[in-house]
Image (cartoon, rainbow, N blue to C red; front, top):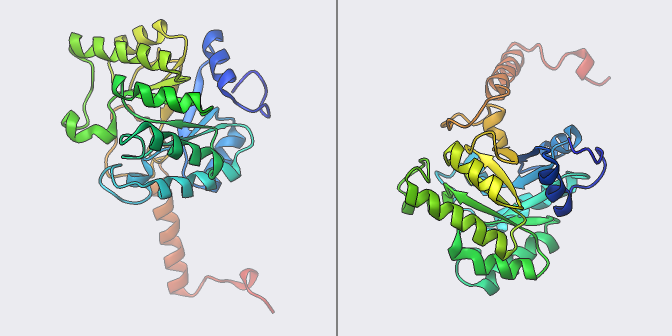
Length: 272
């Protein structure tokens, strides 16, 4: 938890200060009001309304079908719950790739309509001008390098990025370019630990790892993964802190049994 205190609002300045103090930054995804409220009350620093909602909430096979309207809808719900954490809206596929002007407009929607405090977008040097223009509009930008799920067809699947020296050098260069373009932090997904450590030490902005090892300035996981709610697959970098899917099925099974047997509702759940 931030040393600034539980109720002090997390801002871009807070994130910068945490990096410079060596204080680890905590981040999770959320897509609804009750989950975001629980995270905020627990003391999470950053909440990402990720386009991963396409897979873990909406049931798609990838993040690609997620729309701006989907993202705005879920970000609104999260923002209503949050008092302390920074809320970051994930810019979905084709919301920033067509032009810098459309990217700025869509990023602005996250703040103006949905109550987010920042946006996240994927890509390296090819999105540097977009990052620069969104930042110039007063909208904080979190960058995202390594495994970028919106480019999964181009990358050839969900696999570690930057293992070869040329690829590692490109990711390092991209991180510096994005920092210079105005990004306040960068997610490093599925990159070797040594590479993430080098990038983290070379940047003034914070790095947030997801499959990037312990040397990143902070960590992020998809909440449905770490709570054991999403069972379709589990990436190597996920630690399951709970098995809520099993608990849910157990509770639902008990409910079905009691309704079938006529033991629920009992007198204590009924009115006279």
